[in-house]
Amino acid sequence: MPHIAVTLMKSGVRGQSPVNMIPNLYLIQQLTGRDRVYTGNTPELKVVSNRKMYLRIAASITGIAVATLLYFTLRGPNEISELTAANEKKTITLPDGSKVYMNQNSRLRYDKQLAGAERAIHLDGEAFFEVVNQPGRPFVVYANETQTQVLGTSFDVRAYAATPVEVVVMTGKVAVSHDTHKLVVTPGRKATFAAGRQPEEDANNDVNYIAWKENKFVFENTQVHDVVQTLEKFYGVKIIVTDAGIDAMHPSWSPEISNLPKLLDQLSYMTNAGWTKEGDTYKIYKR
Image (cartoon, rainbow, N blue to C red):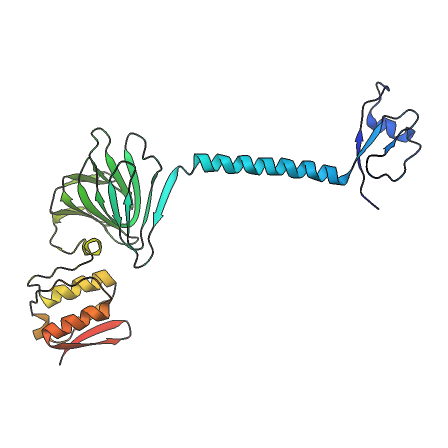
């Protein structure tokens, strides 16, 4: 049987509810289209076709959907989120003109307009910042419960999960704080914040701290022992030099960042060595 949609309309009967009127109905027959039924003392019953009712509902839903789409299209998200995957780097220009160079496996979040009394940036991972000076509007990087505040400078923040937060300043001056601790860091210096330890501020002796940004390592008369440590840290692997003579060599070498086997081939050639991989460990040996 077809469904029938029935609407009660007002009639001349006053003081009587629709429930009380129902017993007085003495004739109902199956209707289609725009047919109507009248009874002696009941209100007029108007039947609305299913098709017409569905069209009205569909039109209402479509109107709501269009309005919602226009709202979010015109308004847009309040927060911008930038991500980099493994072996991916990205350069971002912020609304104030500052530049951010993101290292791999990192996330950056900031207000769409970078509005407010401070220019707040939230970082998970590592990024190098070149900050445009705006007097009265500090630039603040929030990373692993630390805050790095500047007005105009360039610096690197490394804040990967489960590792100490490191802030290295190239130009200008920054203030790094965590809880009640605060350090002022100047060019060529580094601040380190590790869980459960007092913060440290000392000289940055790692010339390759932004090798990922420059896409190049720099080793100038660097001991192989230190070269290997740099490669271990950068690629997240274990490298063992089995010969003391090779370990003590001081090659000068500025290779472009590439896959690790290629770099080990170059290092082995310069030191007359060989290398092999055993499980997750790389070993450099004397030929």
